Amino acid sequence: MIEPLLRRSRTVWVYDRRGHGASGDASHYSIDREAEDVLAVPVDVVAHSYGAVCVLLALDRAPVRSLAMDEPPLFASRVDPSERDQPDRLLQQSDLDRALGRFLRAYADAQDDELSFLSSLPDVWSRLLQGTQTLGRELDAVSGDVVSALTAPSIPTLALRGADTTCPNFPKAEELLSLFPGIEISQIPGQRHLGMAFAPDAVKTRLTEFWDRVSA
Image (cartoon, rainbow, N blue to C red; front, side, top):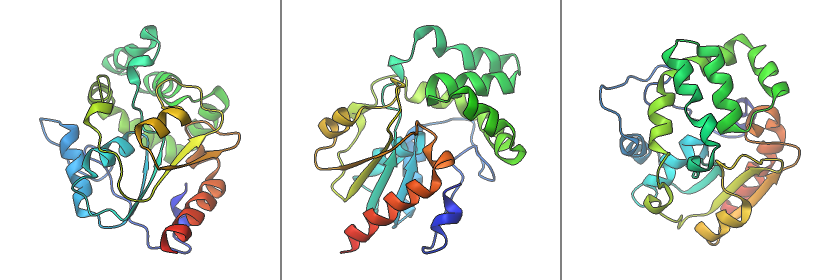
């Protein structure tokens, strides 16, 4: 929902990650291959959630001018153990709607009103359901020690956060500053992990201000 706003003033390239949308897939999966996909993108990158982890993994090799990352899931191991396996169990039962709902609640900090709104948008919900086919492997990829494999950004970096985010999956502001000294943090008031969907104007403002400073 943020892309149409950014297209008003910038050239925007949006690609489907492996196994998503129009992108193909392979029998063997590795998050490192997803990170390598970023190497072909000499641009100012906006990366949300799992995509932000992919970008961070490639920063030492990628021709990226600046990075705006929105809540990378660096601490999936902190999620309540009773919730961790629920999405995968429901996926194995082909209960995609419930699996997606449990995942969004446990790993994306989604609330009931947000889920109701998203499920009321057929195009959006169908794309989210399509993405459940890669949920298991992506959760596996971030379930261990993700932090030790990351490179601290040496480029201008903005870390977006929902001001109301409480899900332990995502680093707190002080943890971001400890992991990535020198980055800029901007919190979106009244939002959690899905601020790009529910507060696109606020996110656009933060991004535009950040890019203006970088250009200056």
